Length: 269
Image (cartoon, rainbow, N blue to C red):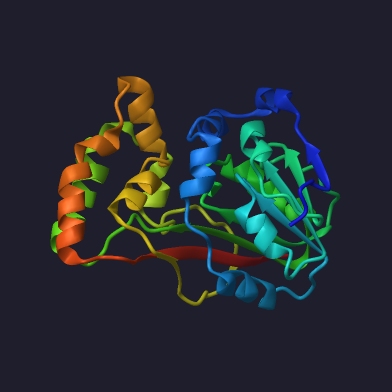
């Protein structure tokens, strides 16, 4: 892989243009742990997204984080713009010759009108000013372009003893630290305002994760509420479940779990 980006536009003053939701988004994680401990989206997801697009000249990945989705889109689109409001995240982004990284809020992409065939938002749209972002999406989208936003489920394994520990961590340990925007994620985007008439039914996708209990704890440590807990208490929230999770995980003999992906997809005229 190329070691240099095609472009990296890091405007550190862009925070001045942000609303409260996106300032929370900036503070939700530390860049390297987030990149290292989040699972990889399945290639089938991007192949399907490309299949529902009529043209494949330009894609925009908003809230790109470390660029995972943006780089995956290069297999199907000529040019990718990947935007995020966090310059530190973009410093850690995966370089690719066809990806332009830009520090910008989701409602100010800097793109020309009617220039985009696909817009993706991976696990980030709940942080956006939705009305402003949807307005920007309509402005930059070509006729019958596709908007796709997704998140994935809180990890559950189907093993009662393990799932009880994970539910306790989510609801009791982290409960006071979830910001209001996380409710959209916890409800799997079912309640996400999505004002588009031509929604597209998506196939089922999931993230396969070959994890031991320690890897799962590393993943959980990247969540907004886990970071907030640490910043407010100085303690790692995962330490409260490390032993019971390891015991239940080992007893169950788990080596892999799957995180279902929850997609909202629409044609944007």
